[in-house]
Length: 440
Ligand SMILES: [Zn+2]
Image 1: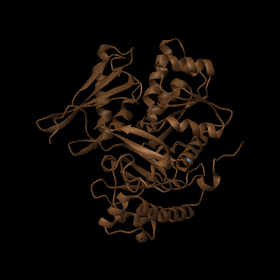
Image 2: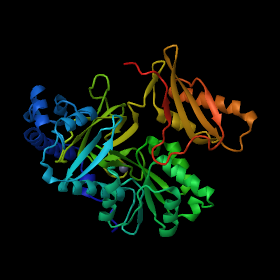
Image 3: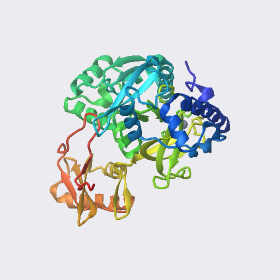
Image 4: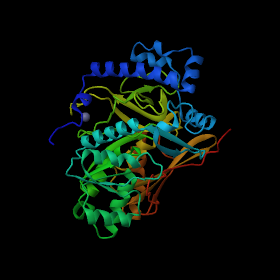
């Protein structure tokens, strides 16, 4: 088993051939959606478009968008699967569910074929980070409804020995790591950090005493922020790889190769557009915009022009690894972005700065509020134990200056706390506290 790619033909297909493949798949898929989903049928008719209007990939722009709200509304309007679905319930073998801010869980249904194809994509991504049948893989993601749970099956299909840990308390997970000596694990960046630190407090040095040499992370932007990645890699003496998933489609649908320059999207299954969030027109490759996905094969519920709410950019050039599939770079959520003095501020940029300053622990919180109707933000950080009270002012100035350099605006206040004062996350870190009054 010395092959470099999981599926060489697909992963290294020349760009023109790949796009022709996508076009054929999309033509058939739009017909399928139009004929089988009451929602898409009505929506295409109302927008005056028909699957026949798709002559080239860019014609997809003529078709209407969907988003989380439509997905949820249609599910409520036509229970159980919603009328975006294209198959009867008897063909569905698995659903995941994600709870939104309104508390109504949106489900993602899979047919058996969808499920198998999804797990084949997972195997491809695992293979890309270097997982091989000789590896022991510790799956530390939530199994309860969460779409990341079943991703362990892709690792089994690849031939790795899999340990289904799920989300257990840190002590238990460290026990499993010591006992079974897994070589690869998958968690969130915050948790990889937290777990490494809590191991140390128990007298375990993750870099020396544990056998984890590759960590897959997803769910937060940290894995693609080089300063964060390097800190976690040092803590564990392991390589960190970022994955990206979207619960409405797949567990993970994109991942880093050994060059760690963007995340290869499984483009034989999912088409990506990057649009200006205001005009909804495509931006140039390399420019930031809202990421919009279209599935090409998932039969249970096609997602056609799904506005993800994620901000990022793409690179469609062939990668040094030989893969031709587009690399995506996620830089934040539209919801997390806030505007200060006309500047778009992404928390991921603040994280980048905080984690390049070695006098700080790397933990941080952003507090957003209003002062005379203007948005302001404060930052809380933790100093390392060896920093004296007399050094704090200089440290605060340094942070403020670096943030201004990177973002173009600076925080109103910086609060330097003792190491350990900011609560550690066990799953996704809550780093943004928005105290602005919500206008109706
Ligand atoms: Zn690559």
